[in-house]
Image (cartoon, rainbow, N blue to C red; front, side, top):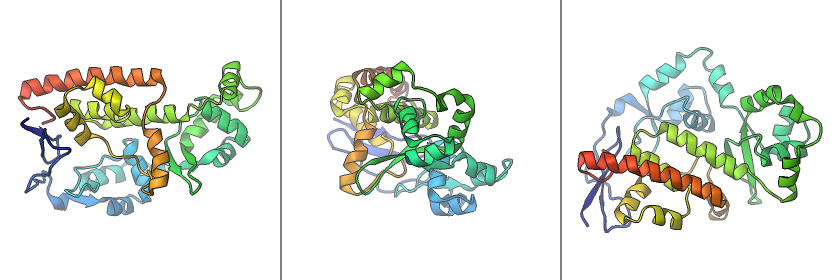
Length: 288
């Protein structure tokens, strides 16, 4: 079926054969930025005065821009970017404050000055959006929240921290509804799209949250699906590697409600129009 060239600005090209199941790295991968201008994630975190989780959150929020990945896939950061971040006002305290998170309803409730049950209701009903998750030893999802966002919510929506719940919240809770996975996915996709630099990358982000059968319907061309799979974003920081916990976490990555699926399908359709237009202009299927 021919050869597909899948690459993105600032990355080596990955060569795919449309008849193969996945990407094949070129024999001699090119590195577009001098190695001495790049540092690994551990060193970058140390130089910015952050923990590894804090650095991952800073990258997720666009506060620190990651450079081209190493051939192994490991994150790297341009020294110029680290110098830019260090030169910002209030560094490092201000940066650390912006990525501070709290885990779970108890910690979130304490920060807001409410009970855990009220905090859980506010989050389940979509008034507070998680920034991440982790899976505990009981295979339960522990949602993470940005502390500065919770403080801003307490100031902006002080009335919601007391009194009775509105009718729509009571209906959702009575129906055992929980919007946390959906609101987290929406934020996760938005942040990934913000960092995407190519139409095919944007399409891959949207495809990554759709069930496999939905992607097949929207993208009937197997060669295009190979491209999207090769460009799919990695699981977010904190995604478990232990199989039993990973199964629980995987369920958070895919849209489930029919209206949510329709939303991402429509977005993928639009993204593919731009991606195919780019391929038509370059004569290659996939990013260049």
